[in-house]
Image (cartoon, rainbow, N blue to C red):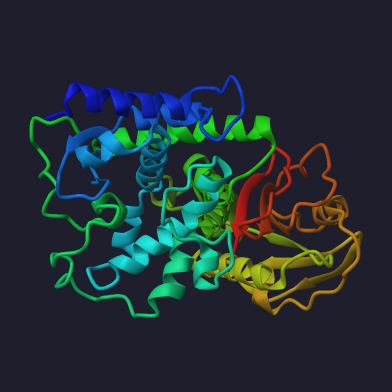
Length: 416
């Protein structure tokens, strides 16, 4: 099913208007948004008299009122199409399911999503009529849809599915909230549709193109830039990664065994007339270098230390085998502790992890594993300490750009 030729021509003109470069500036000039091309040309259009203008479903089908389409200017058609395309790119339907949005809260979720998208659409002069802004709700600009929804709904999340199938207003369609409408076609028909895997590929392609264009222009448009970062640099829970890195490093050192005549070999019975040495697996020595400069987030440091504590306890590493070095521009204290989180930290000046690593390498017995907790704003040595596995836990907030660390250290970004 597709619109009649004249309507198809108007849709084609609107898509071309969105992605083409303008020859001369003006309110009706093409928008020059080539990064949207992959998405707007992927949507499948379906005529429907049951929608006032346009809505979309999760399969990237856009339902269009052909009477409105025939009367609306190309600029208005393009603005509505861009608006719905951003809903699909942001996977607002999937995010709504995560929040258990139902028919009682769908209105607030739509308003929240539109408020989050409005700065991106405004930057390109593509704001459809009646699109709400954050200021309309006395809320600050630049928040996510989830943050706006929390402020607008003021309702506890539903703990069931009883209201998800109740009728809801057309709004932007199920492509925004995941709630099926009566005018939407079921999946699996001969009509073209975009599946989950294809949608993810489209999102990634658009995110790459968007980042390139924004970098060239030198501006970032709110929620769209945050979405790009999430698509191209997804945030992975750092806690299991940090614990896993510690366990892997200690597991590697546990492979080292020493021969000793204080313990009989398990093979002694095979040669009773020859004394065979047994083997002893030493308890690994662990050194924790903690950046105590003033720029380190104490709360995040405590969380990271707790993860390392848990990993060490699970591996049976005793407190006597853990040495903690408090270091800012120089090593302030060197102590052995039963728990990493019990460390008394001193410092507060600049940062130089070279001093910490030099001191750690000189410890006797030499540490098998060195874990460094730092915000990364420090000079590093060119070479790692000999004979030690090094883990760099780089601490920062989600909005921070974390500095690089040396390739010889196992890097774990710890964000909170």
